[in-house]
Image (cartoon, rainbow, N blue to C red; front, side, top):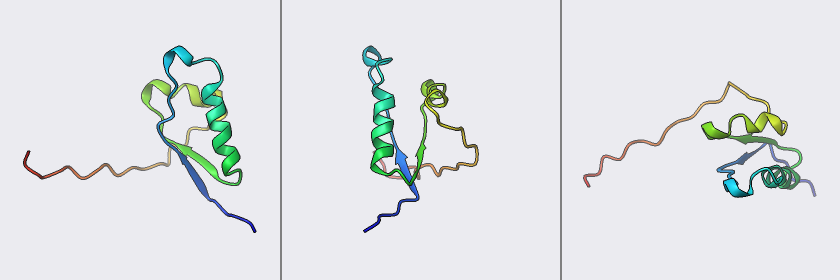
Amino acid sequence: MRTFAYATYLSDLAVRLSYQRQGIGRELVRLTREAAPQATLILLAAPAAEAYYPHIGFEQFPQAWILRPIPSTRAG
């Protein structure tokens, strides 16, 4: 049996500052890729983390689009 996956989305990858620079983020990405090796891995980076991802092999892909949540119209 073969499972097909086109894309895998990695969301909210964060490592506590005191644990950074120990390979934890890189290992989390490796495990994600291992779970779906045929898929393209997609993530949305926090502004403070944008410089990290090229360092571990990600390419910036400008043709991405988002739809923000519809604002709630409920009264408080």
